[in-house]
Length: 330
Image (cartoon, rainbow, N blue to C red; front, side, top):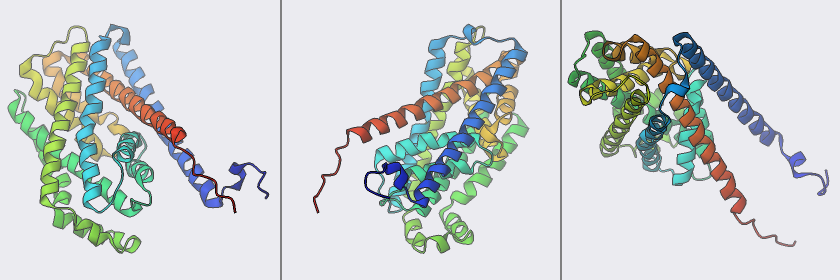
């Protein structure tokens, strides 16, 4: 193969394997997103609801609140990587975090870890450590979400025993692995040390100060996610949530997302809607509860796709503006 042949033909088998791997990921995510959209459209058809009836400004506010609600968890993930001795840029983690969120629409939830790890790894970020850090952030987010749901249910006027019970159970299950000695032990048990003999040094960077900071930041994120549902309800004709309904709405989102996560169903499809409908129906009626649950999923899906696309476009634009390395004559 001579120097005049196209550069694309010079790719090594490993480089081609990476291209194929990423195309498979894109295909799986696209399938999951499409499946979610079709399910939402069918629910709207059954309820006789048209998106034209919703207030677009409130829907926009809901989408923005959802994107902002993920930011505290992104910051915590970046802090976790740095605590573990890795040195990603803020932009690398921002892109990896938001784009990786689309992986939840693929069965098994593992695609979130795969995408975020693939996008953030570099000569400054070890692949194994990056994967472990994703688990730290995800388990912390679920543990905080469970605790947040319990608190909001207790503050609301609809503190139902079964929902409180499941929130507590999930909180214990998700929170136990985030206890640092337990987490370090689990990492060793699954054999991570065989892939990275230096993993103990990275794990040593995790401390109580980091986790306390994470709980505080992620709690703020959960509050904004709850406000996203609040905005969706305002967007719907005939549904005007009062201030007294806010704790229940906040609990709605936290419990729906946490139970959807542990269900291992792609995107928590059906589980999230069931929780939202159960909590909203006594106040807003069954029809409004169903439509708002489905509408919330669509708004969040659109927000994720928009945010991820913008981050990828900006990344491509920055790569094009980056000056090429100077050519050195041999």
